[in-house]
Image (cartoon, rainbow, N blue to C red; front, side):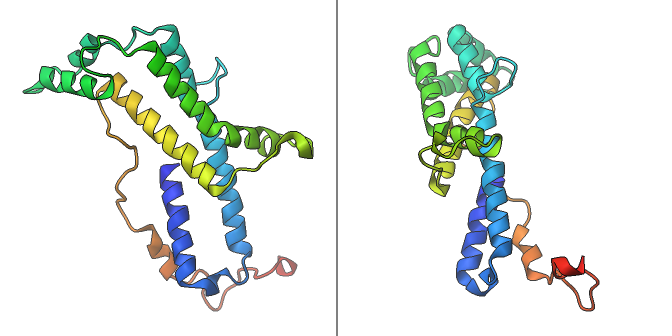
Length: 205
């Protein structure tokens, strides 16, 4: 989802520099609608609280029920085998949980879960009322904006990164990856080559 988010906003910059590609706007409208639906459904999957689901929210629920599951001693053991493993383990736990704490406190887990659910609530309702199902017009007061999607995705990234580090001793502050190629290269090539047999309008199909 993070890569899709980056591509979407980079594409908006491309359109700003060359507004001629927006006329007609059918293709961009189609891409934007698909982006909103795909990202919204993806965000909703991270906060699915159903016990049959495997989601970030479910992990936090289970950690609340087992508040001593993430301990300093267990976290430090994952760093064994490195030259300064014990030091790195304690430093990592201090930075994320706090100095002198033997376990990740239950209130901290609850706060992370509440933050996750609050940031995704508008998107979750949008998916339930407009994407997965078609509820009555008054069932949702406000549709999410692009900024709401960005905010929810940022929160998911931050919470996911925190618990990935605590549970696996791997990761960083963000799961955003460094691109291995330039996706914009495809935009520099003509999509329809002359002469072409590709239907140009529905009447030719």
